[in-house]
Image 1: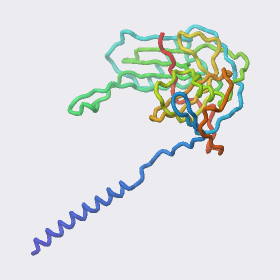
Image 2: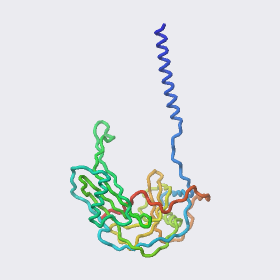
Image 3: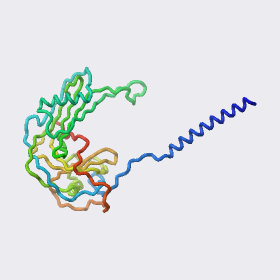
Image 4: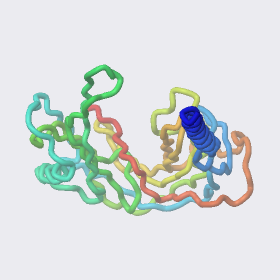
Length: 299
């Protein structure tokens, strides 16, 4: 009889533990998932490649900025690729690679004026082995990439950059530089962000347009300069408006629009809805981008 009671008590204990576990799991499942707060849409437009959502009102006032004249000089443009790199040795740390990059740039006149901080990141080769062929078993360092971004008057220069890649034993694998020498040439008046928006709605953009129909939520509008690629002549740096945001797929994208005068009369025929209430925050018009624009790297 005692043995039976012990067995019953043990069974009750096991069942109680199972019920407690199920209760905890059920409680966790009922907890709401943390979700990103959706952006408050101020206005929606029909753009050539999908809807365009603005998360804040934009100014209709033109601005004046410095006009920069281009004076070509040696080492403004560099395109070097190592065709026979060594394949043995060690990959240096990102901090050491940044110091090596500075020493290499000293051979080409040093770090240019207006250069942002050097940003280094290590690139890896994925090594697969074992039964889990879909998951790499080891990440092998292959090179360190150093990027440097250009700015003028606290405004980014889209297309102006330095990109260097170092391999084993700090060997230079590639060096690409687009950094035209410029001098101030007075001031120039540029169009307002609202006029730049009208250009986007007409498909008048400087960057390569989207190849698909994708909605873009614009959360940052920046007044910037644009530097052309290697094989393009340029007398002045072009003022541009940079509309940056997130695609419906979750990826980042931008529309780059000339800030020079409109080629056509503005109108509001593209607008769908506009909410005439003040937004929570204003769009920053002078917030430098977080990513490097590589531009056209073809020689």
